[in-house]
Each structure stands twice: as C-alpha cells, then as structure tokens.
Length: 348
Length: 247
Ligand SMILES: Nc1ncnc2c1ncn2[C@@H]1O[C@H](COP(=O)(O)OP(=O)(O)O)[C@@H](O)[C@H]1O
Ligand SMILES: [Mg+2]
Image (tube, rainbow over all chains, first blue to last red; front, side, top):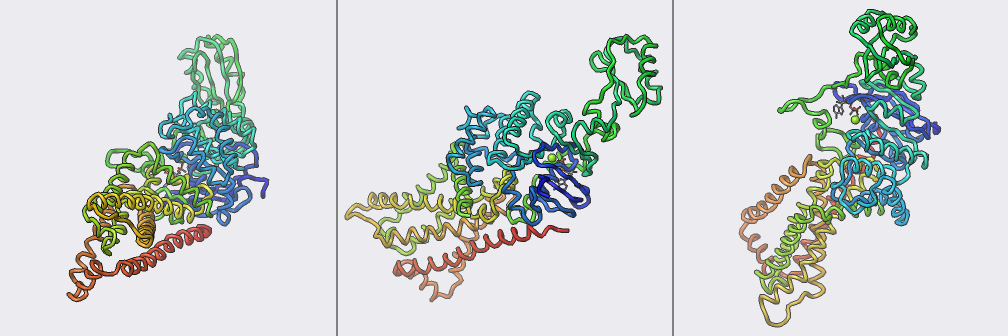
C-alpha cells in the first residue's frame, strides 16, 4: 500500500442533494506529478479537502502516504503540504515571516528555516521583497509564495489546488517552471488540480480527468492521447472555401472542421481513413502545402469529455439578491474546514 | 505540543504588532494605557494604591482591550481565508486554540503591567508629598489579578471569535456581553437586601485589601479553570470525533 502516495476507494462526498464526488477510485504512484483535470465545480477541491481530512467522506476510503485519512490524519498532515483554493497567506506578515511561521509549525531548526526560506525565495524571485507584507505582493507573486510555503518543510507529498489559476500566461509559465525544477530536485509527489488542459499535458506525468464528481479517465498524457486515437488532420495551405466546409460537413466521418490562422483542422470519427478527405479537399480547389495527422492532448481531453459538453459545468450556483454569485463566494462561510473540528464549527 | 503553541503565539504576536495595520492597534493600546496608567490613577490620587475597589479597575479595564484583540483571532482568519490552510497544517486543534489564548493573554497582561509604573508617576504628580509607591505585596496582587482576568477574558473571547462568522459579528457580540456584564452587577447590587448591600460596599471601600484580593482571585481561578478546560475539551472531543468518519 505504501508504494502509492495516494490511494482512494469509492471515495464519495455529498452535499445535501448534490454528489460532489462520486465513488472516486485512484492510485497515484509516489514520485509523480499527478494532475486532476476538470472544469469548475467538477469536484477537485472537494477531493483535496477529503484527502486532508478537512471534510469527511460520505462513503469510501482514502489513504495518503500509507496512512488512512480517517484514523491517521495527524500523520497525513505532518507529511504533506498544501496550497488550498484560498491561498491563505497572512497579508500583514512579511513575505519571509509567512514561511518562518510554517517552519516553526513543522519544528524546523532556526538555521534550516533561514536557509530554506532564502533558497525558495530566490528560486521564486521573491528574495528582494522578503521584508514586505505579503499583502502588498502582486497576485502572481502571492501565488508563488503560497507554493513556496506549501513546499517549505520538504513534505513527501504536496497538494496544489489550481496553482496557476488567475495568473497571466507569463507568470503561469514561470511558476510552472519553478515548480517542475523543484519537484525534480526534491522528489516530492505532487497532486495538482487544474482546469487548464495544456498545462496538465505539459507538467503532469499522470492525469485524471474528472467531471461532475466522476473520474472519466486516467493515465499518462501519452496514454490518454493514444486512447483517443489519432483523429485529427491538420492542413497547412490556402483556399479553404465555404464550399469546402459544406462538403466536409456532409461527410459522415467528419466530426467538425475549423480554420486556425492559415491551417485547417478536421476532426474525424476515430478509426476512419483520412485519404477520402484529402482528395475531397483537393477536388474543391484547396492548395495543400503540408498535411499532418495528429492528436494533441487537448483533443484527447475533449474526446474523453465528449466534445459536445466540455463547457464549464455550472453546478447549482447560488443566486444572491444582486444576481449570480460565484459558487465559492456563496459557500465561503459554509465551506467546512476540518469538518467535525470545533475550530470550524458554529458558523453554518 | 509546547512548540506548537509557541509557533501559533509567535504568529499572533507578529500579526498584532505588524507594521501594516499597526496604527489602529497602537491607538487602542495608547488609549488603554492612558486610561489605566494615567487618567484613572490621576483622578483617584493616593487611594489608587490601597483602596480595595481599585482592584476592580485592574480586573475590569483589561477586558476592553481583550475584546478588540480576541475578536480577530478566529473570525479574522475565517474572513481573510487563512483558517483553512492553518487547519491543513500538522497543528493539533488544541495547540491552535491554546496559542491564540496565550497570545491574547500576554499582550493584554503586558499592556496592563506597563500601566503600573505609569500610574505611580500619575499619582505622585497629582498629590506631591512623600513618594507614593507599591509594596511588593500590592504589586504582586495587581499583577496576579490582572493575569487571572486576562486569562478569563482571552479564553472567553477566543471561544466567542471561534463561533463568529465575521470579526464585526464577534465585536458586536462582545460589546453586548460587556454591557450586560456591567449592567448586571450594578442592578444586582440594588436588588440585594440593604444589610448585604452596605456590607459589600463597606468591604470594597474600607475593607482589608488583601482579603478582597483573595476573594477576587479565588473567583477568577475557578472561572479560568472552567473556561480553559472547556476550550481544551471542545478541541479534544473534536479531534476524537474527527476520526469517526461517517460511513
Ligand atoms: N459547502 C458546499 N455546500 C454545497 N455544495 C458545495 C459545497 N462546496 C462545494 N460544493 C459543490 O460541490 C461541487 C464540487 O465543488 P468543488 O470540489 O469545489 O469543484 P472544483 O474544485 O472542481 O471547482 C460543486 O458543484 C460545488 O458547487
Ligand atoms: Mg476548486
């Protein structure tokens, strides 16, 4: 059992009428970067809360680093780090003091705390701002600091709930790069959630795709790509006329077709041949410079979800007096934290 | 466990004295020390050192500072979204509670002790003559009573903040509580039979300070033990029930 960093069996969580997580069974090997990929409301945060004992499962079991979360949660929390959906930095404390606090929590000796905070702050480009209150950092820097804090005590496993959400592409890429470097150096197992498909394909060696609380597929990006089949033709050239599209739409094996900056992309029903399509295109005057048959990770993801409903799932969003309220905001007060613990009770 | 409590206390102190937002904290502290260390002793004069009823000030005034300090402890973390991350760390519930209580106690008690030397200055300034000073016994009594009442206020305040969704809510509850706690004894005394009423007032005005202090200390020791035990037991039951995952 210990060779798996995380093992869940039919893990289920219900909120009154809603099943936020539906019989999740997962085995995540130690040492991997596991990406939990799904739209908003899919059940990613719920899963992390269950694995950290902040929520209790309605049914099922889970073990983290070989410790049952129901009976040995202290041991789980001792050996893991977490960046939760609310980053939870202390805005009034200095950047370095935010790390210092976590070092004290994990009983790190003073010298080690110093060295570790310098190492991480330099790695994330925050060293020059170490004395400033964390609240004054930019959004992207706060995210980096929160990741550094989650990794500070060298946990065996770290949970990162949408670490790059809300970042501009450059900051997101820089955070991803620092993260991948650190993981390679320190051999920490990572459980990260994301709704960003290319990110999962780039960063993770194992991926689980979740929708409405159900695990739809899991495996390495290559495996997922292979199982989706090579079903896309990419044509570089010119002369993609209305007529060509109309004819394509009539072919039963064509799922959809679109142009993207000078290239034509045609998605085929898995298993069908490309040759008739190419001759059809040639027949209606399309000039082809290059034709490639490929599958991206994105295609694989969409084929798993079923191309028709990859739109974000808007699960029962509460409506306030002033119109729609984001689900997280509406639940801000009721989100259980260490469910059953007095420290989070009395508010609902 | 001690290191866990110390870690939380360290963080609380850092936040209480952080440069950011320190203005309002400092204002509260200055007002408090000004009231208890300068204004009141100046008004009362030399009897500030010896009158038994003055001990009620040393017990009562720190409660005001306590409400502002403790309102933020849990409600503030909840409001600013830091509580979830704190609960995901290895800290036991009990250590988080105890650390927050300890920080509030040391902060408020420290401010109270700061008022002691100031009050001597105020008294000697008001009533010149032979130097007015505290005996060791009087000093010990003031320090002990202030500590006991700080523990009482801190445990009550932290538990109250734990049950409040927002800091504002906690502050409103505390203001109400302080008002009730003030009005109740005043009316309570009116209700007493005439004989006991004069007896009580006589004890507070002309009584022997040492004996009054002992009674007050005894009351607060009982209250403190009850409250702190309640706080720790709630946390312990919570820890235990956490492992009984609903099937
Ligand atoms: N405290 C709660 N009460 C009721 N429903 C909730 C609560 N927290 C989350 N949910 C619902 O559970 C589902 C899964 O949420 P979540 O795990 O936060 O999704 P994700 O992190 O993938 O965006 C959503 O439909 C969400 O609205
Ligand atoms: Mg989420």
